[in-house]
Image 1 (spheres, rainbow, N blue to C red):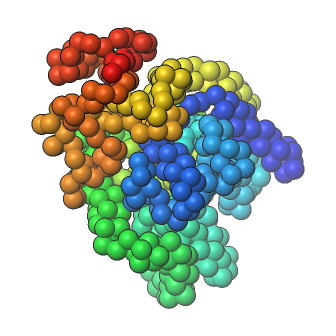
Image 2: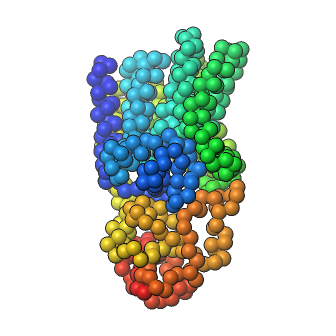
Image 3: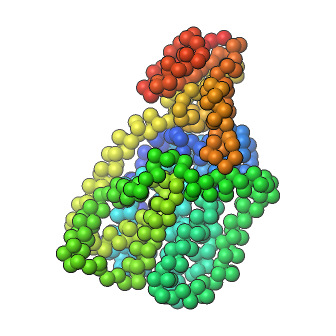
Length: 478
């Protein structure tokens, strides 16, 4: 397949796997709703610079992904397709970048296989649909490292300026990790190459000036406008605390990212792992690596180790290692083209079908259905409350009105925001159960498992409106 048709075929795969059905997948809790609701509130306020949620300034993530959402909402309206548009766009860009980089490293045949492996891997397919920052970060870190390596290999050191520029955009997308992660990978690679003296050729002064000038487009005005509270929340809670104190202790286990790797690189990983493992076992030695393979392996392993050392672990954190893994895997399949083609066709068919299985699952994780039931029942005097373990920001997104997180006084005291703890995320409106109004109609979304506690703490004068399985909707008239 020639270069022209290879790219067209990759674009077709991306259109099928990433864009198709995006309008059917509702905004889900607990993560996607934070991005969409923040962008929606920014759009409504006319303030496109300071992220805000539930009427409060929100320092969870930098601005770049919110700008993507705002552009999409301006073009397509505030809906699911618009929310998922740029993750799909940047995922497509990631596939094309992989094709470009692999063709520079090897040849166009291997490049096509690598790009197709990336597009049709489980984790990549999942994140291409997710309303999160990671597809954008993937492209920025990938370009940073690609341009570094090509510049290093070809002695075209002016390419480093591109690396620094995209590191700056990465900082605008996710924070300091966008600069320090690729920087660490480059440092380790130069050390392995016994070429640390090359640091003098990295244009560090001019380059870091470019990186931080780009980052300063948002960070400096945010500090000027919001002061120390911005630094405390963004750098303190959402960076330092995330690395040192697990937000979800149950996932802070040593095998977490090993499991993510094994699942996320399906279906292409098993034949590669089996074959390479068998060869190493038989020969009793590790294969020799050239400079390209060393760089790709250092890239992948460094990402894995860095995030394994973080206390907070998410499926998406190790996502930047997907490009080098896809290129390394492609080296195995390049001499097994027929086998690869069958595997690729099976993966595309599987993920296309899987989308229709995933849609009902995302509906269960979304407040959209509840909003469709509640909305016709509300007026300006209606009070909507949520007595749920996980607060449904997506319910707020679809209702376009306040939903109070209802708790007893003791629980509420533990949940209210406190400095340098994970409670700083709890910026939604609260209501103590004893404060439930008696002169308004109240609609309550209640976890089925908390139903008995709900009645015990309030009263039994509630009418069941809808049983949604995990949750129920009750109403109490004034």
